[in-house]
Image (cartoon, rainbow over all chains, first blue to last red; front, side):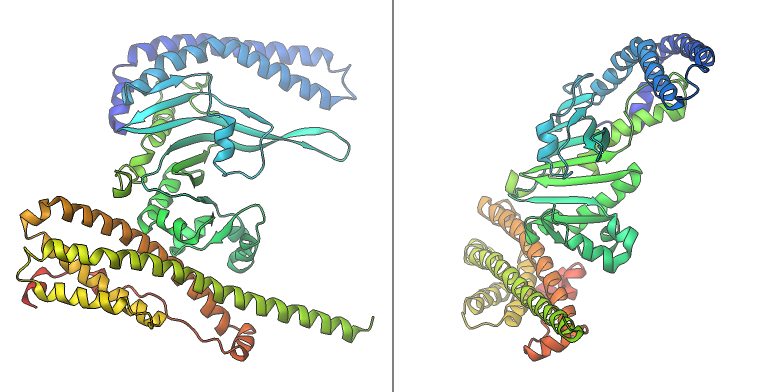
Length: 314
Length: 185
């Protein structure tokens, strides 16, 4: 497995000529984006008097046209960035990893993870990476799962169930049940007593499993179909590692163990591995954003120390 | 409906809920202890095989081997209370660790396919036992809390419920074993 510094070296050395080329291109794209923004603003001012009574509409129209224009103008640049930067980075990590830009993890796998109780009505995503790392299957992609909600007047709106990175890999112990580890919001917002009561009466989930690591318990809540199996999976060391993984990622982390697989969802709340036209790719912070995310995702097995095979799976 | 009737109904509901929750907690402890017992038995079943595989080589550690065989026959008795089972498990765990450390001193034994296989099985079972122990301890903690806290303690008293013992992590499990001490035994 390549280290983060190896990835950084590769980015700034091997990809440098490409980054420079892309930088020139970005400048032009940025100019076009700003220009179109200004044109849109001028048009707005011109039609303002007609929409004076319907400002909501004007705003809605602006967002729709604006995002369409942005996507249209940046499309080729985004494509090129993925082909010439993201894909080589992934192949540098492991030659045999497969990368498909416009694919995502399937809906059935998302549902099978049992991480989210509401069934999505729309799933979007991209940047699908799959293959074997150190002989073990792994797949991951960007995901945006949404649910259509209807209010009493029949108007529908989209609610995000999850947006971020979704990873599936094999677990190193055999098990037959389901164990789900979720961010602990009840205990954090209502305190231990009421939070605990609310958690143990969650009808959408299996039995509440109280873990014997107070720090882990503060950050996560565990539900499972089997009290013993959940503890067999969540050993003390795995709990410590999940906790430090969560802190390292800096985002909400959902983990489930279902039929020998582990599903990890990291809620970034945005589309990852997308180039911004307003920031240069040569900027260290921008670069680290891509590299760290990518490294965190593909090194998940090492991070959680589930790359060592346990005897029963030999 | 008079207020007193409402109060009586509410009181009855509270009593029923308290009673049911106590029963649930007691059953949960028994249930999980059943699973603990199953994995402990799995481990006991491996002991004769282990002893016969290593005794040829381990001439100097006869006492450890005899000790573990004795412990196993004790564990097979059917009249043991949960507390006794917990105590026996601690002794067996410590004896097994001593054997595994002693194995390290016999290169022939360490390389023996049969011993290696046994070691793997024991490691795996050890993980399962540890999980079962943790689940049991949590169930016992919930149960003990319920029978000691007000107001469930009043009902628990009336039902003659007593607090139960958890699996304690022995001190010799926390520190790394002293090999020299083992051989001087």
